[in-house]
Structures are given as structure tokens and as C-alpha cells.
Length: 175
Image (cartoon, rainbow, N blue to C red):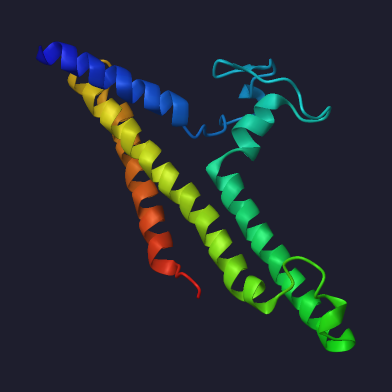
């Protein structure tokens, strides 16, 4: 019975990791798949100059998403500054009909929205790395992987845990 439960656990963890794995980009761009068959998905091109592999492995990576969150924060800060300058020069009526120009939205909504997105990225990365480590521990005990692979999974998990905890300590809900 224990063997069946172990197999079910491996199957469940494998499925979860497969469904939720944040794919790290291959070490070299020459290793990026040139076909549209990536991780069992048929992904047609969405841009003539960028392969589906480049988008899948690079643009949709944790690091890229976190970098984009910083860009969005900078853009929203610019929008805040622009709104304040226009309001100062032309009065509140100049912007009152434009969405997201209220002081409340810009000083409360914008930071909270970004924290939600950023926190979700860190949290999901942590959860995925935890599942990958659990699967690797089981695979190691079954002698399906070596110690170096297990150690890599553990290091990835510990880094994701540290990153999430660091984010958690650095943010606050704005109200």
C-alpha cells in the first residue's frame, strides 16, 4: 500500500511541477528551441523577430516579470507626476474625467496593485521550488537522481524562500 501511495505522491508532484514550473532560460541562446513545440505546448509565433522559445524562456521568466514590475512602477510614478503637474497647471477639472488620476488611486491603489503582482510572483516561485524539492527528495530516495541534482533543487528552494521572505519584510499594504 505504501508503494502505491509513494507512486501517487510522485505522480501528483510531477504533475504539479510540470503544470507550474517556472522555466529558467537555457544557459545559451543557441539552446533555445527553434520549433514551436516547447514543453509539450505548440506555441505559434507571436512576433516575426522573436521565437516562441525566447518569449517562453526569457520574457515569461521570474526575473523578466520582476524587472517588468519595476518598469511598471516607474511608469506609474511618471503618471503620478504628470497628473500632479497637469492638475497644478490647469486645475482638477483637467484630469477628473481621466481614469486613475485621483490621488487616492495613485497613492494607495498603484502601490498595492504592484505589491500584489510582485508578491504573487515571489510566492508562486517559492511554492514551485518547494514542490520541485519535494519531488527531488523522493526521486533521490528512489535513486532516480544523484546528490548533485538534489543539492541544486535544495539551493533553488532556499533562494526562492529567501527571496519571498525578503519581499515580505520589505512591503506594506498602503491604506
